[in-house]
Image (cartoon, rainbow, N blue to C red; front, side, top):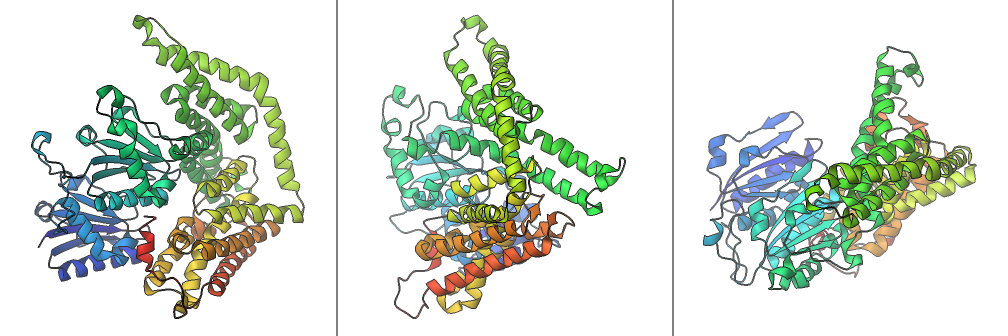
Length: 602
């Protein structure tokens, strides 16, 4: 019997927080454990944990979809999971938590891993007979779904293979489960599963394997095997392990697309804050901000005058940072500001970011100075020379042509006819559902965000409507076609509906992973319809995120009624398509529980 404490929390603080708390309490007690769960809900914290209760615990379970303060659990074994998994897979969650803490009864062939925080000094530790020590970092552009799904997949697969693993997630609320110097020093290999830039300085001298979050989500076993089998991970000579192991280009997930997504990930919070602030200024009227001294004018100054003014420089700066690390930041930020001043827009910012990154990287790698002057390179030589190269290129070469391209694109989008608008809506809508938060989805989203700086709001509306549709359609399908879904799938459908309302397309991933040939085309059809209808009715959206909740802000959406109709229609199309293509469960078809299918994507 173990003493378990935990915290549950979800974005709304209502259903999932309470359901997860009850599930862990009830199942934990049925398993013979002592359980105390603190629920952080919409009305405050219920059953709060005191210091004495925490100190007496064997393990802490954090079932949360939002940030939970962890300082009070310092030094304790902490197991993290989502509220939805705690609800649907409560017993496996508890067993995994206890196993990681070293207090669970496990099968003979899977000895318990030592507790991550209570382990003895390195000299006294014993590694599992056949296992390796792995540390990992997962990070995706938005830092929401894929970051944590990749972490869960790596943890589960490593545990099944008798490896000890600790995964740091660099998500939208910051780094969680951070790797300590001791963790890194004791590791046999480092896995970086990221689609954005990750600082690798602290892993110097360790065997390192890089891949994408998508690979970690779908093929965690292959990733771990490849990392352990890579030459740097298996070489005995210290020299062989002195540099990071290089994965194949396809496996690393690097290159221009990754650098672009890094810039987008850093830009996204600024765009969301600025867009919602601008939307709030429209509460007082579309042109109320023009009157100096009013609250509407202040809100517009914050959102449009400040947040949107630094949006492109931040995009450019962190594209360069992804390419060249710190040396690229200064020329990238300055190049992005020049793109704004030259009216080259987000295209100019993207070009300046890549130019600054590769110029700074070249200078960092090839400029050689005497040892006494080497310290001047990062603070004087590279910033000055790279900024001059990027700045002069932007002013005399890039700025004019890109400005003309941006003006032409803006004029086309703002003046396009109904047919072109519908075709663009179909394309953007379908892209949002093809990979549900993956590269194609992010490309459509980044394109629409960039157009906000040119006062072009229609693509943003189409993209958000299309991104909400897949999980909403699945939710509706599990209600109207109950005989086509298992009980576990129907429960998962409710969670998908909440995610859909919040514009988190990733809520549809478990269903698509289990039955891609039926689910993905159904979702693409619904999203394409939603995007096309939004563009047809001329809907515009000034806030780049927020889902259905942003619709409550007056004047944030133009043609609100038609926009709501587009979302509802797309949802219905997806739901009906799913009901048509999926056979009732009592008919012959491949069987399997959703939870088993999700094992490949968590």
